Image (tube, rainbow, N blue to C red; front, side):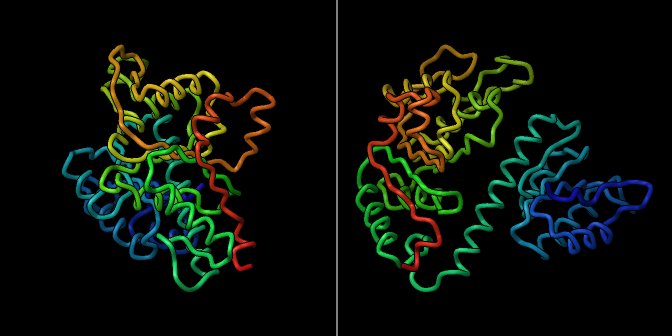
Length: 303
C-alpha cells in the first residue's frame, strides 16, 4: 500500500513534510488531508500539497480525504488532478474498494510504461509489439471491432488485455459511447453485485442513494469485465441472464432496465479448469467466448 501522506499529528506533518515523504518513498497511491497546518481550517495548504505531489509524479493517484467536504473543495481538488474526493467520516468498505481501484490503475500504467521502454517503433492503438503473434492479435482486433460479438481476451498478467479491449472499443461503431471497466477480482464478493448491476436506495445498509452499476453505465458503449473467472456462481447466473436478454434489475429493484452494450471479458486464469471443477458455468463461458483473442507474453513479442 502507498504511504499515507499529509496527516496532521504531534510531529507537525505539513506541506513540506508531506512533499519530502512523497519524494523519498514515491508511493503510487496517496491519502491526503486538505486541512494542513499552518492553516488547517482552510483547504489551501492541502490543495497546494496536491499540486506539489503531482508535479513530482503526474501519475500518482491522490485521494483527498477531508472534513472540509464542501462541493467547491471537492470540485477544485478533482479539477487540480486528485483521483477522487471523500468526505469525513469515511465509509471504510468504500475506501478499501477505492484504494483497490487506485492500485489497479497504477499497476496498469506501470506495465504500459514498461512496455513502452521495452519496445520501440509503431504502435497499434497504444499497443506495442512487432512479432507475427502480435500482428495476428492486431488483425483479430481489426476484424472483431466491426461486429458486436462478445470477445474473450486471454493472456498472462501484464499483457495488455484492457488496452486490447479499449482498442476494440475505439475501432468499433460504439467508440463515441462509454467504455466501462471493472476488475472482478479487486472487488469483495459482497459488493460486486452492486458494482455490476447498481442498487436502489435502501437496498442494503449504506445504500443511501440510488446508484447505477457498471453495466448500466456502459449503455451505448462497451463493458469490459476483467478477471471474469473470479465472478461467484450466483452472479454468473444474473450475468448470463443479462447477456441473453440485455436487461438488468438493480439490487433491491424490480424494474427491468434495457441496456445496449458490447461485452468484452478477460482473464489470466485457466477457464477450462473452472469448467471442470464447476466454478465457471459452461453456458456463460460460451456466451462470452464467441471470439477469443490470446495475447502473447512480453517475452515473445520480439520474435
